[in-house]
Amino acid sequence: MNALNTVEYMHQLGAQAKAASALMARASAATKNKALKALARLLRENVEPLQIDNARDLERAVANGLSEPMVDRLRLTPKVLETCAQGCEQLAAMADVIGEIIGMKQMPSGIRVGQMRVPIGVFGMIYESRPNVTIEAASLSIKSGNACILRGGSEAIDSNKALARLVAQALAEAGLPEQGVQLVATTDRDAVGQLIAMPGYVDVIIPRGGKGLIERISREAKVPVIKHLDGNCHTYVDDPCDIAMAVKVADNAKTNKYSPCNASEGLLVARAVAAEFLPLIGAVYAAKGVEMRCDPEALAILQSVPDAKLAAATEQDWSEEYLAPIISIKLVDGVHEAIAHINQYSSHHTDAILTRDHMHAQQFLREVDSASVMVNASTRFADGFEYGLGAEIGISTDKFHARGPVGIEGLTSLKYVVLGEGEVRS
Ligand SMILES: NC(=O)C1=CN([C@@H]2O[C@H](COP(=O)(O)OP(=O)(O)OC[C@H]3O[C@@H](n4cnc5c(N)ncnc54)[C@H](OP(=O)(O)O)[C@@H]3O)[C@@H](O)[C@H]2O)C=CC1
Ligand SMILES: N[C@@H](CCC(=O)OP(=O)(O)O)C(=O)O
Figure 1 (cartoon, protein in one colour):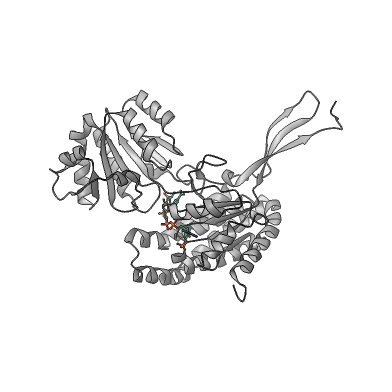
Figure 2: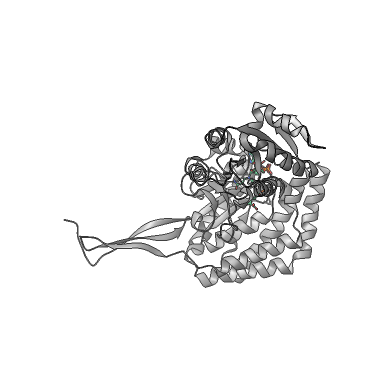
């Protein structure tokens, strides 16, 4: 930031991003792919130095008492870096959608009307302390011909600065402006306040985080926002269902990883299958140290499970996103009550039904008001890479422009193109 104050610094980033966005937008597919391949190579060449920078973040995080799932998401292991590199290569291998024209139709007047896919321009993104997101956002920004300003979580500042240097190097190698992807190199939250209030420079803000972040964005943003918010996701075990499959999926949905927004925080169980299903999943959760916050009926059934960590659920539990080895459990009459509970308490991110009943599955898909609704699958699948998008900016919990995992198309818009041969309107 040198001698600039936060306002001046953010305006400088904004002006640079705006200037870079014009060059990013007209870059050829080959140039953008060259930058992505260079970034993949640089990530592989810099595994050790990146881990040294990451170690500083990790030391601070542990000293500050960050929980294990949060420390885990901060870690840049060789495997995480390799996944990032592969992600860049996969994006490079994908077709370039920028400039494609769709739906061209001949009108009675003689003009032809279609739509061209174009970059949004400049997006600002605020996200959690997960440094691999810096690479996912940067690579998607490059491929989609946008410029971006990235503000990662403060715990990841050293890792993000190191990654941003590699992104700048990759852009320069490809002949693209280094300011095409910029990191906010301060943890001062005033910078966030500025980023969300620069309509002259920033076209859209993508906040990826919890309730505190969104409250501020909703209050202060002066540019359009695509919200990527918390995940109070549910798994509903229906009657009838394949009990063995339900145990496997409900286990994965909760315990595969605790920190992601797509982990299930609530387990709803049809009363008719509870006596059979709950002791089985209860034993799995007990073995993994997952605390179960239960309604009275579920609590009564689970008392028999050895070593189960049980507690009575409060009203607050139904709305809670734990991001931890805790799950709320409630019995319901059936699919109607499950849907009503989910629509009342879910954060409209991702919810799943485990069922053998086709009609129940269809009803769930139609009536649950969430960005992803799933049948017989783990909520952990709500992810851009898993959905075939190559990478993801995050999971939009908004209904406009982009909903669910956001990839390249979510960072573009369609403008009308009209082709004529001198026609005039009568
Ligand atoms: N829908 C999605 O795609 C995703 C959603 N999430 C959600 O993110 C949350 C977990 O991450 P967590 O780190 O706890 O999220 P936070 O909301 O605490 O932090 C996310 C980012 O927002 C910043 N931030 C938070 N509050 C403010 C504020 N008032 N003013 C300015 N900046 C702010 C943080 O900065 P600082 O570092 O300074 O705190 C950080 O950069 C969960 O709710 C999870 O579901 C996570 C990943 C994906
Ligand atoms: N789509 C991502 C979700 C990432 C996510 O939620 O991250 P975080 O909240 O930082 O653990 C995945 O499943 O990997």
